[in-house]
Amino acid sequence: MLITVRMAAVRRVGAALALSVTLAGVGVAPVGADPLNYSASLTTQFADVGGTDLALGLGVSSPAGYFVDGYVARSDTRSTSEPLDPRFWSATVGKRFGAWSVSVGYRDFEDGLQVATQDVAAELGWLSNRTSLSLSVSQGAADETYEIVTVNRTLARTVATDRLAVGLNGAVDVSERLTLSAGMKRYEYDQPEAPLASLPRLQALLRSNVFTAQQGLIDLSWNAGASWRFNRLSVSADFGRSRSRDDGIESDDLSIVLDVPISIRWSLSLGAGRYTTPDFEPTNYASVGIRLRGP
Figure 1 (tube, rainbow, N blue to C red):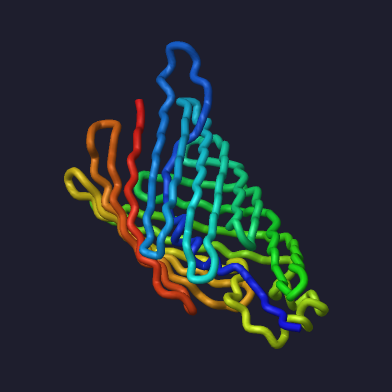
Figure 2: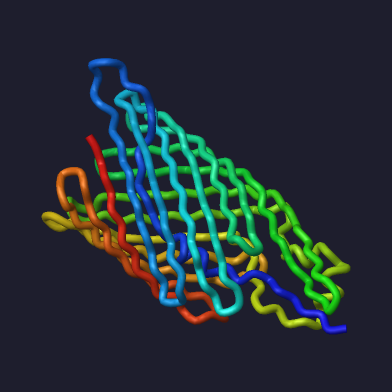
């Protein structure tokens, strides 16, 4: 009996969802107080492998320091083996206390084929005139679904595992024009091995078969970037690397974004990037975004 295996190839999701939005948060201002600050952004992205990505970000903050952020993104991404339909959304609420801030949030991700994650995160931040630092801790769960296609039927198996993550991010204004930033995030899983390793019966069935891809979940990611401010516009570049938990394969994402003010409240962003991962052709992408800030 011929047995074939299909495992999702989702390393390109990182590029497909590389749509960033900077948001502020929410509160209710008393009558006669300073107005609320708000931010809204819409970003679309196109990749040379096909597919379109769309992201929407909303946020409001009050003079008292309360804030809430919302972010939702959907990607119609094409791969050589399977079309992917990744979806992501998050919500965060927090409070600022002078230079310090605390927040809690929820993040939900589904690649539309194999991987789904849910995480609750808490973050402590510090901001000075020239430097910002943040420490985050998140606890969540990850589900991985595998399909075994036989002559007579398709067998589906979902493996669930809990995970804990710790992240650190920072930025410093080197001068009035130059800002440098860096960050990293480390994940620990209850099942440190690939899910198939803990399923002897499945592993026996699959031992002699070739996987179209062997994508697992990320156990380490880091990034470094720089931005330069001109008189009326700014340019930023960022390099990020992520490592798969299951096989240790590393994927890279290099991007550059140009921010152009249109008016006091409106700005336009133009971006381009290249996402590379072993076993796949590099993905080149471009993005266009518009942002509104007030009051």
